[in-house]
Image (cartoon, rainbow, N blue to C red):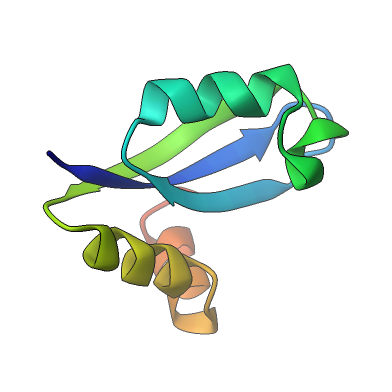
Length: 81
């Protein structure tokens, strides 16, 4: 069983959402269906990046890295954002 850290980009206003999950397909459906408070008003969403990890804690730590200044710089350098 693996976990995924992911980044979504709103096609409506260009904002990004950072998350982690065990089932990426189901989670994307939830975002697109408006079942998540933050993402509901910014639909539709496009998956722009994901990384797979063996444990939940590793995926969660990577999600938090993406939200940091260092993570933002990394994503810019990699031309992900």
